[in-house]
Length: 77
Image (cartoon, rainbow, N blue to C red; front, side, top):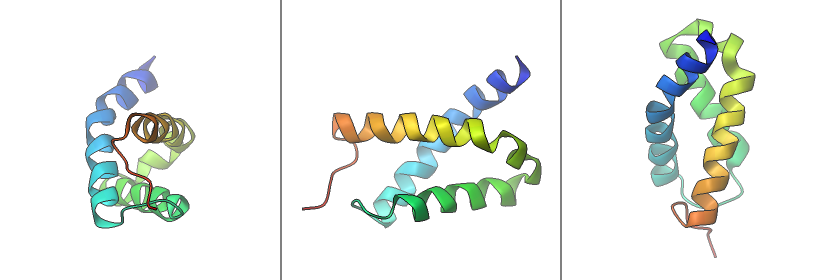
């Protein structure tokens, strides 16, 4: 249960990081690099985050899919 609370508390910060990266590097085709950047930032802030990375990356995938489907993230043409 503790991991659920930790990850739910991280979601606003993860969303902010995703939007900042998308603003800096807009468009598709760079997903792996963007995901790697989020992981690196989180690990710089707190090295113990790596043990939660599988769950966090899953949450990021859900958020990115939602943002793509709703137009928050625009596909490059």
